[in-house]
Image 1 (tube, rainbow, N blue to C red):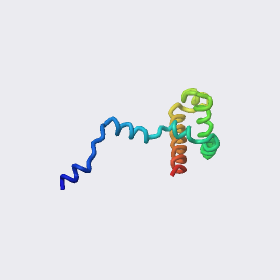
Image 2 (cartoon, rainbow, N blue to C red):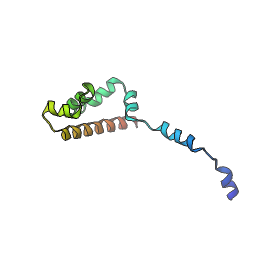
Image 3 (cartoon, one colour):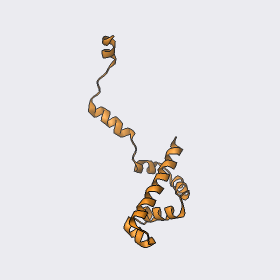
Length: 99
């Protein structure tokens, strides 16, 4: 029986398996690049007004969390929390659509 097990096993160099694992994982940026502009805008449109505003300032205007906080009279931490939650909603919406 061990003869057949040994025969069925094949050795794969570690470098080859690592490349395969990395190539199957998608970064957030790669996923966003695969979406069309209309699809992304539709996902963003589903967010609350405050979330849309902060995402627009962060990624559209390129402002930092501190700059957004000063502009909207919010704390830095609150801006970070809103961004985190909004991005999480976008990721979930994209993942659900991909299934």
